[in-house]
Image (cartoon, rainbow, N blue to C red; front, side, top):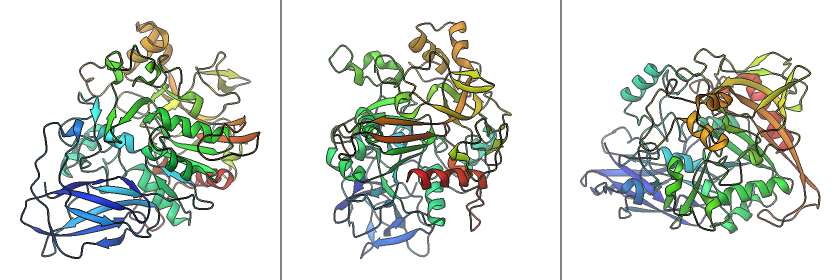
Length: 519
């Protein structure tokens, strides 16, 4: 297995320290380096002497309580640019570095002028991480970030089979041959977020970076305020599935005060979670929501069911405009298995498509397969031949939501899922029908079966509520854009092995339009 480890804390500013907790064979001298990852990975720190990683066992309750290993190395964080930093351990005599499992983020103390804030989906990394044998998909209801990330989450080779939208046999073969966790395709830095960062750096776009917990104002109000004060644009990338109540407060308040958000992501804010014990544990009862201790209390709206559950009173559509319950999967197993993997354009004259020369009915993103693997949408009707939000709309849909492009998607049932459901869970269409319609019959499931990935935009006109981010004009206008899929960033870097990444020019232009107009 080599040397593995984790860092704590996971988010710091310049001048703070990070404890590196390593476990190895207890004898091999190691070179330990910290590398800022991106287009050109850069070593920013190296331990002055070789380090021996002690043999620290994996506790049986590590998935829930963390490894609680003794710290091995203290890393003093210098005046390093904001970004994600990997820990690299290398044995003697020219050995190959161990696959990275330890990481931390350097966030800015204050917003860098003109830089969007990239919020890494670290709650989702934690949810899928199966180090120690369990995650939220194999029976867990609590997961700890104080453990190594599974192989493939932080780094993996670019090759056929690396993505969930690849044929399932190809994905499984790739994962086994490279010794990766089978959950690497669902989450982690090495997929969409790293691709976006490399594209941004190729194009001279400066980014500030933070983790999910940094924007949870209920427990980290000061960092959240500092990160958003004076900011114009917040970015969500890839698979951004798990959000806390405090994160919703911060992001929605930011938009209400005139801030902009681009969800270049899918399955976004599907589940509510809670962070406890100074972020050391993340709680998510999910399908077993009735067992959540907040049920029956005055905090029942914090129940860790899906955000669209009526129990929360706060569907994610109010923030993103779309929801996984009206989307589903595309190019996965039996869900649109031969779908175009791109969007059909409906309103080509929207500013998002400026400079693309797209027309109504054109497809975009098909070569890169940007539609998939998980998609968000809204219930649709047709007006004058074009799709619009249904009347009545999906619960929480913002006024003025403009549907720009769509692709078919559907949730899993017992016939279409490629994997059996976990004990205590239900097939998604069953769960959605039961919670949203109060009826899990086949007829009720059919009302939700024919979903879509929906690319959309909406504008919020509201006043300052005095929350994180500081005051603004009494009537501020914030804009939200969503692409409604997890795979958008693959259109920005089709092939990392070539100098320019060979991006899809239309996907790149649309992304640049977002940054130029909203950033």
